[in-house]
Image (cartoon, rainbow, N blue to C red; front, side, top):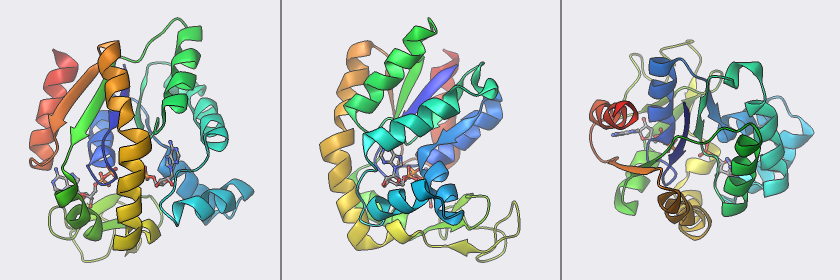
Length: 214
Ligand code: ADP
Ligand code: AMP
């Protein structure tokens, strides 16, 4: 099963993608996580990506497409994957379609996690991310068992550099300009499924499961 998660930054794509990956035993691929791992390791790709991410801009397609194509050609992707944060532009979607088409395969579902802008700022300001494994929490909605410590690996939690309110505003406008057109793109392909992302995490997941299993 090949699944794409769509939605504004902070809509809950990563939260739901992790649950889908666990449930269906397919890899969760987040281009944002790949960039952040490169930033931590101070690779040239990481340094270049950081200059865009810190401003809330998209990393250019040339860089992003290459890392995504490399990742989905891995052996562990042969039974499918859930993409979180890719595609974010129409050209990125077209590249993915071509790559999947060359294997005589297709994307099965584009799940759009719908959350209005008004809710996003609160989601992002309360988000905390693990410095080591990237696991995500929310101080109010999904708090870790111990304050500021990752449940999974015990490392400290931080506020992501790009979750500051000014950057979030820019990320939202970039989303509406460059990424939201993908909703129409996948609607036309007949694979768009929209869920109400304002519900509780487990309710959203139940809705997604219904879609994937119907
Ligand atoms: P995205 O991957 O779309 O940027 P995340 O999955 O990281 O978003 O979620 C953003 C923040 O909102 C996180 O702090 C997460 O814990 C929280 N969150 C995710 N889904 C929900 C939900 N359904 N209700 C409340 N908070 C949520
Ligand atoms: P995310 O973790 O998905 O919220 O992504 C964090 C940041 O990484 C984004 O704001 C972009 O700067 C960059 N990024 C992640 N995925 C992509 C992508 N597919 N295209 C361009 N930039 C991306």
